[in-house]
Image (cartoon, rainbow, N blue to C red; front, side, top):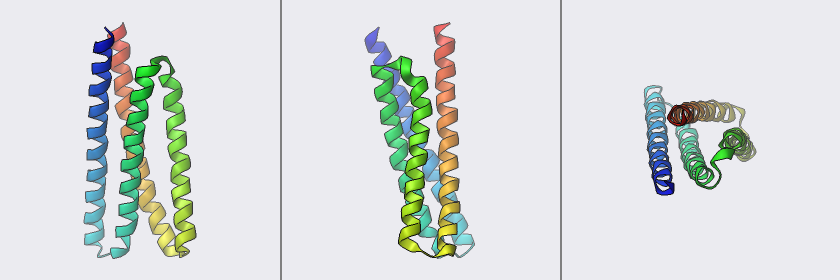
Length: 142
């Protein structure tokens, strides 16, 4: 029974990694297309930083979920509350560092808009993905 549980967690984590990667790639391609259509090269740096942040936090989120699901599945509810809060703090830190590094209001505004779009897209993906997982787990237990 334990092995089956580990296999389900592994498969779920792989599906999450794959989904998170596809979401970030799709958002990046759409953003690069928009930058190209608007002939705005200033969007490239915000897009790259946002994509890298989204990938790193997405893979960290997936790894953390897998660890919590294996070690203490009863605490997943707390994880679902704490992990997005930590991601939000990290996002605010990235924006603050960018503001200090650039110090140009127009570039900061552009970065904040692009970064916020990536942040919301990944937040929606995480919420929908894990809401489905928990719904399936709840239905499976009944």
